[in-house]
Image (cartoon, rainbow, N blue to C red; front, side, top):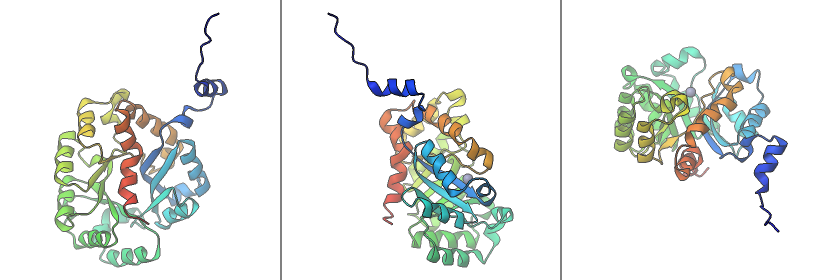
Length: 276
Ligand SMILES: [Zn+2]
């Protein structure tokens, strides 16, 4: 009698029942979500959590505009949501905040009143890097042991580490000029700097193929690289599954242990040290 072949049952069941492969996909920590008032009109906090569930996003950094929206989402899922204090009241603030001398006091008050694990995303470029308002926010972040998310250029990163040498910083989108050789210099120079790769899939893996220079960068700094989907619009929330799939596709081209650092454990390590 021929020996009966035993097939592992779960993949077959998944196939038969048409369950999404996502159910068995690697859990993610998305460090770059926005939840803004105009999106909240269409997507309740429950709907956001359902999207994260559907795509196996175990934890997520959320930035609200107004800031309170991130805390609202945090209250809905406190083990999952890591709320960052967004400092923009409207679109004008996005460019003008470094000139707003009332901002540090407002941020100090907000930090006393809400549950915050970081400040940002702060959009700031070289010409504003020595504005006192910016330096005061950096000092507040250091006092409260918060992570700061920066959308800006390399000169801003140098200034941050002059002002606050140990600050934990997420450099969003791998910086304004995301060249692996430049990123390698910065990650080497500043041990508490992290980069998130949101919005950079087309450079990292054009046509889905992970590029060699990015592969080398990731292998050189496997502990300092994070993932994010940057849901700055309703369209990006609605296409969240596709964004995750694009990222997972190049992530799968890395050694498994490195992929799981980027997907989850690097960000866990970054936030769990805060102990709150
Ligand atoms: Zn963003």
